[in-house]
Image 1: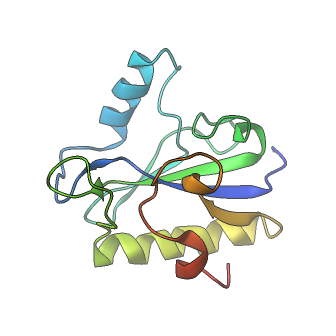
Image 2: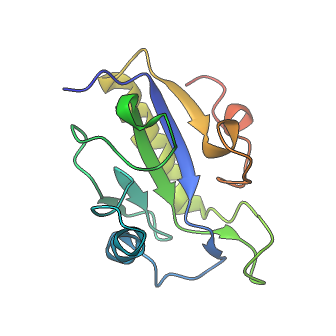
Image 3: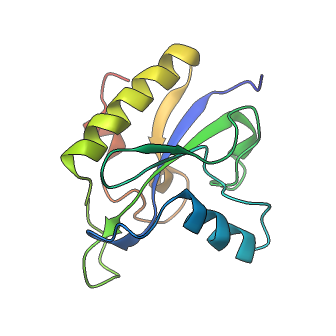
Amino acid sequence: MRDIDKIILHCSATREGDDSVNVEVIDRWHKARGWRGCGYHYVVLIDGKIESGRMIDEVGAHVKNMNKSSIGVCYIGGVEKDGKTPKDTRTEKQKESLLLLLQTLKKMFPNATVHGHNEFSPKACPSFNVKEQYPTL
């Protein structure tokens, strides 16, 4: 098993309410970028369903220079209906699933810290403040 010290949250940067995106779609996007497939370990759909991307023992492709020791989690959404303005578009079901997933990952990797992609890159992703949302994780 890999030595995990970070759990990093992302958004798919897709329009609010667009439920056409799932792990298969992200897999195609990432392959088109030359990656070997979906770079996230988990994807949380609008209805709260959690889909697996990469296996947890595989290195992800989600934050430059951080992939070797991190788990990538992405929720579908993160942008207003205009397609460009960052917005926390998480549904209540997504929030519930994200919290359960993060709690599970923290049990598996108790020393891992939880972060937003924006802490490591000049991006809005995941379009909310992770430290404020999950202060006890």
